[in-house]
Image 1 (tube, rainbow, N blue to C red):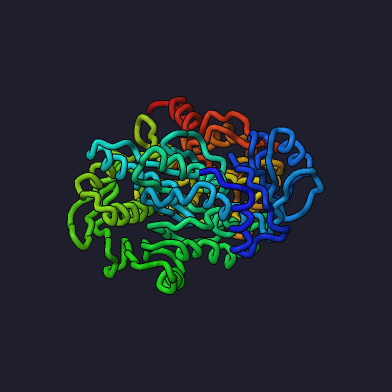
Image 2: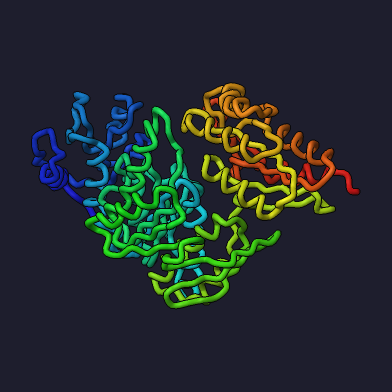
Length: 504
């Protein structure tokens, strides 16, 4: 796997990325890193990011870096590989260094505004059960919450990691002789080339809605949408949800792709879909539907509630069938699958008060949460508790406020990873469209207190109530002043509040 500086320079020159003269050094690169704290002898160091400081490079040199890749010359007595675009150079070098590790397994990429994590979870559960039936080890995955690559597992820091880490994980999957890997692909990863050089055997597009619009992410919806659509430029099989908004543009982009060889469609509405869910019936603790597929017609049962989860399941089913997983295994896996922090349902002792804990944190996911709660509890008075993250996706605040004003009977605004911003400021920005709609919201910055207040209101209400706790899911930290602080989870506070409700 070792490559020389000369070989790397020659490759970059061939790809039109090399700005500096070709290095003739035959020194071998032992490691790739953009983190100055993760440098060892023989590391090729990458100077990446708007906040990069020369001190990081000096630290890398002191720890044994053999050379550095950068868009500019920092004047150190160290081999320099100067490139046109560091973000394009990183995946080119990583692919070369690790020798295309993705060729050793089946790679699926899933994108969309909502449902990436759940669909990744569904497909991983199906493939794990399939591998178990063959006497093989579990499959690999990368999601916004966690990852497993056959060697390491842990919590994720980005939905899709930087290209150096991504190829490092791919190499672990290959070394572990794992057959499948499923991963979320974010709009940021597609826009900033984190998944460049990566050919996906399957690329799935779930849905699209306004999100991640901010100076540090996407300047407008069109940029966000176009970034998502790039997945089709590097996928062989495209799986598309026909229920998505802007479906004509999504389908056309897949059809125009030079890499896509086949398109498979799913839907809960469109009879022309390859995989169609009909007769969807949702209960208090499970739902089921009749699947109409090219080679199957029968009932599918699921623990996870909400029509949107049927859409997610359809995508997972379509991909699993492409990989020739038997329907019996698919049915068994979906019936057992339950991911924490997504459509978690709780009840008071007398079943008068219901609570749903969900990760819904953008316009589409909050709309789907209200839609699901109305299907489950059509006559219930609705109380929603939510906030919006600080330092990113500024446009979400207006969107979330509009959705809450349209669907909720009572609205309580609170903190949700405020970061370096003021909770009160974020809540006031969410509240602007609520007030514009002639509605009122209660602002309680402390999230546990906001949840407690919601259940006090529910307890005092004369009739059935559903309390929606949105945004955090099962997250156990809260980012305040730029620091992740321990947070016992929304689930903890919901259970506590339900226990304290007087029994009638």
